[in-house]
Image (tube, rainbow, N blue to C red; front, side, top):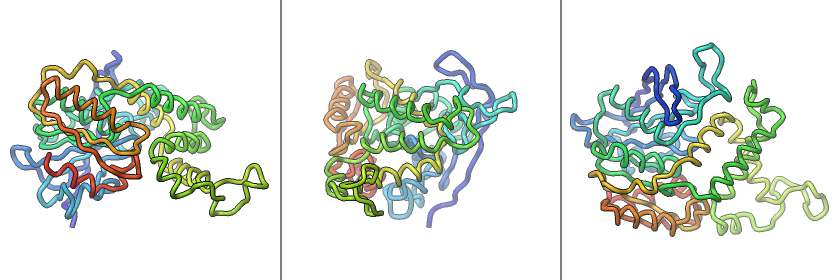
Length: 345
């Protein structure tokens, strides 16, 4: 059985942001599975990716839980809904001091801002040391930033399917996804009452093209007509099977994601860049994981990032995860990921 689960809303008051503004009345939603040891050595913090939440076991069950690499019978696993999120922490859907939701007024935040809020929330809960910080994609950005900013209190950081910066092609893809949302007539400049579903669906489709490998798409869909029906040979608007898959993923995404949150978090990804910050290593042991077929963070690029941090003096190792799932492999095949990093935990 999963260890006891406790949710906390940690109130942090005013938080200064990297951009020079101060965000008032910040709340961090924290979920804790199990109990930390007195020295914190058994604490695993798992910052989430773009659409995750503090409830790690609900989206990363093969990494957290009975029989997993971070079995909560031994480990205390902590999740925090990131600053700017929409699952409990302060973000665009939150109510601002004037009584209205923040909406499009929510300030730009950085990965460093997210990590600073996480650090403050954990200290409020009496957690001063982390045995492991592990995250994939945007979560990987946060894991690496933890090592850079608070390495004296982090034993190991595992950076999965992420670089130490966002490359230009990924920035462009994020920009297209945000533009798809902005152009939805129901977006209303960010003051929508109902989610701009059409824009969110298209944004998700654009992103999904980078989340799965080309080999997986070819094997699953090829050029077959949509399994739900239709004939693209004779009707221009009828879909192929891959179109139907993207549409299905878009519907699911629009049901659970806030549009302003998506825009804020993708901009935080765009701004992330730790190149030049590798020097003066802390005691944190770094592990970088690349995935074959990842079309968002190419494995060879991640290997080069690992080499650069190792050259700067960090204890840094690279692991290659072989999977047709591409970028999504850390979510789709968590058991394989756990086996791959077991020697670094």
